[in-house]
Length: 106
Length: 117
Image (cartoon, rainbow over all chains, first blue to last red; front, top):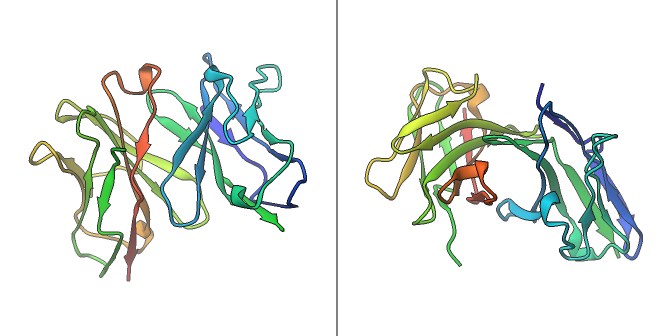
């Protein structure tokens, strides 16, 4: 079965604290994974994709095939990072997780 | 920067009524998608559309749903007889040639919130 799991609905941290948003997937093929972000009242935007191995806005995510995970990390959270974060698995469509709301307090 | 646009931003309709949600994908994109998100739940795939026909649809996309590209720019989702459980945020997305099979990105609209009363 193709599935994406984000176990945390809400993650609250203080500014400057490290952040890790968890994502696990289930897929029999070679996975391609993405993180999408949705800021308040805005559209879903691509944050990063695992094949690019890039860091966007200080966020990184490493695909761990052994653990079937693609956790999103940032060493020092900023208030402007507050948003909904969705992990997504790409097949012929995007399969999304339930999302994690990140709240960064000043 | 080109964007996917959706109208209206919020639609309230009575149960049993027909509703049409409109999307204008990015102009040179060829693959189009509808997703929905019931409040508090995950973003779910409804349907993909390419070359004027449905490529794939989920089990959610039953006979009450239809999609159309009536004029080469708009991409619409019609719900024939709305039910209370159709209340959700509906997102349109588009991708360039090759769709998600290639190394492309899906661009999402800002969503239409449908409330069925």
